[in-house]
Image 1 (tube, rainbow, N blue to C red):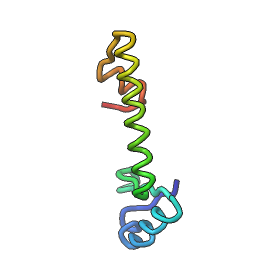
Image 2: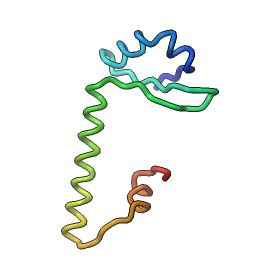
Image 3: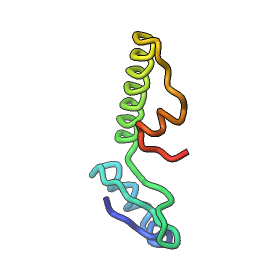
Amino acid sequence: MKALSLADAKARFSEVVTNAEHRHERVLIEKRSKPVAVVIGYDDYKKLEAMEDLYESKLLEHSLKTGKTLTLDEVAKRLKVEL
């Protein structure tokens, strides 16, 4: 994934968006050398959203079958997300 400073991303915003849309590039935006955002094309965003929905559906299905539910902390741990 390509990384750009916020200033560079601003200066090249049209190019960044075009590349995200047509070349499926993902661009990490950094502010003071820290990651703060990612630019992705809308089609890629919709795919990620669909995968998230599918994963959540599978978790719910598993919980209903086993009678075991997960806490928010357990889900975050599985997804490797910090809360």
